[in-house]
Image 1: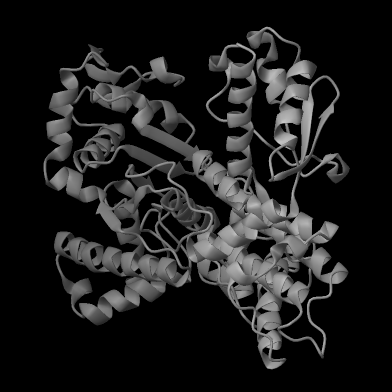
Image 2: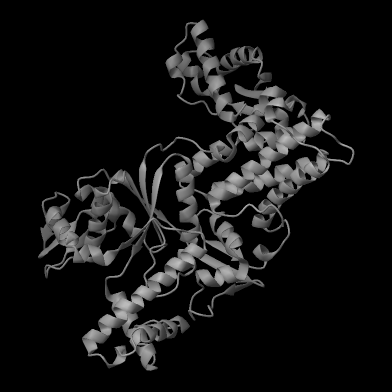
Length: 553
């Protein structure tokens, strides 16, 4: 019995108990919470439903808990129901009911863990969106991993997710990039406000290879050539880096298109008719302080030109016109102000501000030999996505960047995540999957086929470590749901580490295979079914992180 099924059973039982005594059943919540107690001696699961509703129902919590315990004990799926303290209810499942988790995991296969929290919700998920003026730095790499994982867990809950990269190919930073390329092509130092690093010379050389006479062109034409070819080359390199990292975007949206198509100008005229904008000192201002900003923001400057935020608002308007119900922005640590601004922008467009969510990511620091790693071979100033992948590989890089909440800074120890030991979290989880895959191969080599789960006697799985592992597997759907609901894919990574730990403890305590075993041994077959369910959960979870599930290591 999964935690969700148990919660439903407890609620239905509570309805019956209250109804039988003429008490109000409307006091019950729509969903009852059941949790695994910290001390396993207290039972498999616990609920505080009696303490939650007893007063509203006009009874004491302990009386209600006692009635519930009596009613639940009569259920075939409940072995023991005990009342603890002022009204906690501790539950221990019957072996066959507990084994239903194994049946569900194996029956659902790759679908196990998925839900319908966001069925048909159209989500625009924008992340990375680094300026096309250099390789993706470490902060953008964190978003490439965590953003992609968030998209996967939202999709696992039924959302229709579009991953979008906002390509900032308009503005002063592009001019600085182009001037840096021209300087590189001429063999001159980078402009004082330009970009340095070996990649500038590499791209400048590629521009000259594509356009051999570019340096001889008139200044304006030369600038446009280096812009067109150079930005395009940088953009393609960024896309390739992301693809190699396992992060593939559905849409690459060009900021410049908002200006060239007239969308910014049209949006500005729409905004002027909104109560959320006001005119003072010759400029138009957005009332962003109403949504937590430290000051209102200029949208249309006194010279009539749109401020940068006008493009942001036009971009939001474009997203909504494409039918997205929810627009999630994943931005860097220096973008806190955008939370209020974008919500104010939604209001100015006549939308509910809740259609906008802004997630802020914190810094990532790399450490090696106990010292910070700061220099990039190619960029010269910051560590890039390619640097990290070259050092530890895609799987270790992705997993390490996902397993911590993005709203907290994280130090990644390059020495640790390069180790092939249990100290390394990604190795620990992947090794558990590989070990389980090997176990099934070994069973086959011994002539043992686990057969179908329907024919296995899973009620034989009564060992304490078997129970711990089964209940851990049962948490997976709830973990995925929480990860999607809270926008926290790191919950999946931490959960997988719990699964690996529970499995290794089970394997050490419970013999699965020995020479001489055969298909006639029901306990061996039951344990092989449990092992395959564990492998399936690990594979499903790693898939949600975009990390491989190796069969051999």
